[in-house]
Length: 294
Image (cartoon, rainbow, N blue to C red; front, side, top):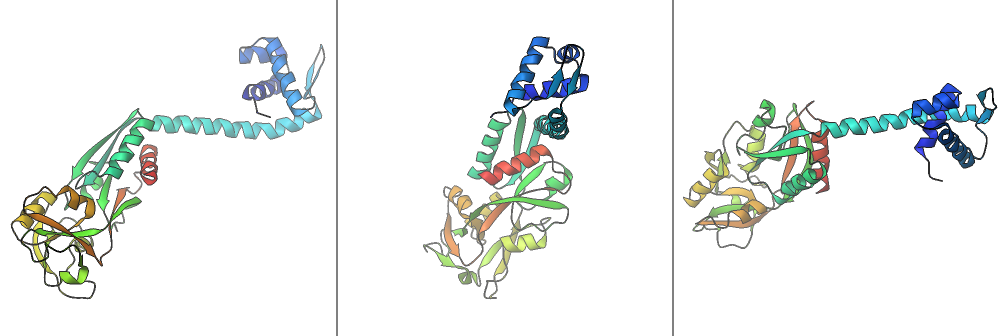
């Protein structure tokens, strides 16, 4: 049988007051309504909870046992409601999310769904420099950032990882590999890859522009860039190739003089949401959970 919280509340107050009149006053009800609620609860339980005479009200043995069990359970229920109220209040305000490159469908979908669930919280997104994935998070300019993996920073937390995508080699249309339908990682040997400039950490830049093939053959390091647009300009000028994920490659198809060729033999690229260690908030956790669901 479904529980009625009003009946339970009425029982708890009457157990404290042991007086129908004072119970009615505390609950802003009539005495007859208090009696109705108590009788309904006793029918639901199947036993008498109070001994009632014209002179006194007292708990029965069943009532005492029920009171002992109900009080902590009711207090726990109140805490659940209060925690939910605090959580709802914490999702107010603005959450600023940085991203590298272009905001993809998964990120935009998470933002749209989060906004529909939490209209009282505004998500503000901004683009981050390709060569500085973690700086804005550390400086507090954004609450969290969607960055290319890997992430191995002691002061940052890596949350949901998503958008695993095949790598492509983006080159100028006159490049020797431009006409190929696909290439393997070992065919990068002897090629020149445009690198990412600092302040991105070395391990991160090495993954974006490796200096060796998986088999250990040399890949030449080309000029360094700070943004994807700088990289595309150098590619079009024939200064080298660049590793980009498939969705980014698809978005650059209209760039004149540039071709992207699917590349196998290297780990897929992936994105992750990162934030400052100790800097997570209920609203940030709610957004991270939404991103996990996309």
